[in-house]
Amino acid sequence: MIKKRILNSNRVRRICGGFSFIEHRFLTGGFLQLLNRQELVLYFFLVLAADRHGLSFYSYDTICNLLGLNISEYLEARGRLIDKDLICFENNIFQVLSLPEQPARQTVSSQDDPATVHHFIMQSLKEAGDA
Image (tube, helix red, strand yellow):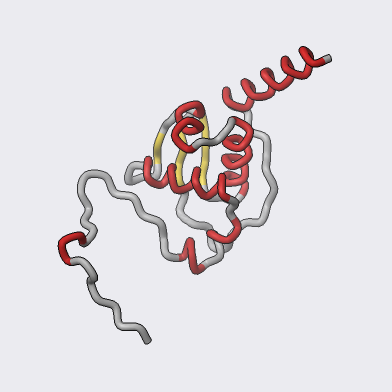
């Protein structure tokens, strides 16, 4: 067994200001391995942005710019995180949820919100212009 020790006592993490955490069960319970890169980066961002109740509100364009995601990647990742029961989303408010008992293995669902509507309108206009 490996005996752990503090490697740099001048840099031990402390809670200052806001506080974010991810349950260890996220790793050991199989949640991590079910997320793709976009889902993982969005989930970690939402955890970091959340208050003590798991709530945050960022616009999709800000999230996309900060995380380097395009709108399709963002919408797919957000939908999958909702389907996997890791987050809730309503009217630009996110809530990171407590972990469910088991990781959910579901597919993406469509969400009715401004980002989705904008995406489909722009996609339709582009397709109409190409015709």
